[in-house]
Image (cartoon, rainbow, N blue to C red; front, side, top):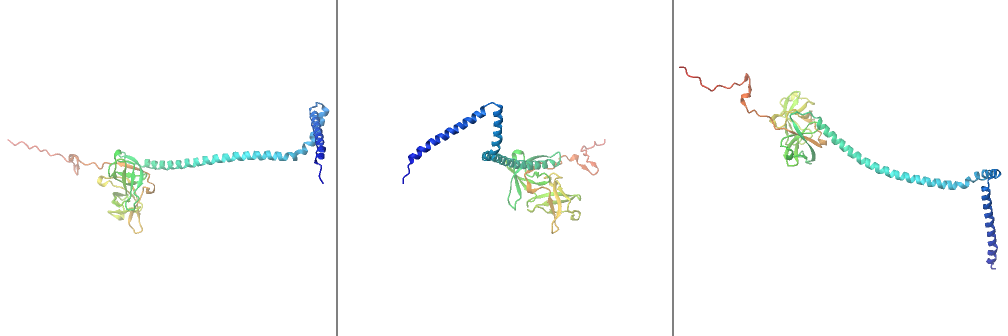
Amino acid sequence: MAIDRSSSNDFGRPLRRMLLAVLMLILFGVFLLWRIDSPRVERFRAQITDKIVPNLDWAMAPVTGTVNLLRDFQSYQRLADQNQELRSELRQMQAWKEAALQLEQENARLLDLNNVRLDPRLTYITGVVLADSGSPFRQSVLLNVGARDGLVDGWAAMDGIGLVGRISGVAQNTARVILLTDASSRIPATIQPSGQRAIVAGDNSSAPPVDFLENPDLVRPGDRVISSGDGGVFPAGLLIGQVAADPGGRLRVRLAADYERLEFLRVLRHNGSETVSDSAQVIGPDGPIAQQDTATPAPDK
């Protein structure tokens, strides 16, 4: 059986129009009610508000939740941006921290060099260690100072505490330092407080042995070892280290210089011992040597 759709449409259309007209009349009445300025109408509006508005909290809950959700999302976005900025600043601070630590270490090395008390007559040149030999059979380092700075073979090199070695090979811009631990190194030394003379001979170990000791019985572990100045190569009084005994009982020198952290070295200008050129000024056992009169006495007449 076919349904007559045209009759149903004809019936529903006037009904929708009537409902729309009623809704418009209600809205117009509410508008007029809210626009009338009268004490009675005002009290009526207040009563309606007290009855209806508190009961509409459930209807406003989704709107309130949506607004709060949007605010939380915006706050989370701001937090994410701030977190990203803080991460970037943290990476920069870590780079600055590393640079500050390196500068602090270099400053400590330079301060160590400045704390060494030297003979006022000695001057020095500070150089940066560029590289080491990298060989167990040759103990040496390379400095960034050379002939342009006036370096000469044989000059002593020190770190912030003690003697490190001597200049052995000078180029225009670089110089090589043979360390005290090298097998070719031989340093005349004095052991204090006994005053014994000895030779600190390198053997490619971290603690070179003490050779040619005059009286070993007068030397004890812990005694200071300094350069003696014999031979006129090194100035006297440079700290080398302390005496120590190995398990075999042989006397060795525990070096004062920190060979694990050689970054700066101080090269001492030393031109050797002054030679005596005027024999008339030599002091003998009984005082100055008098010059003999070479003139012959006049013959007696």
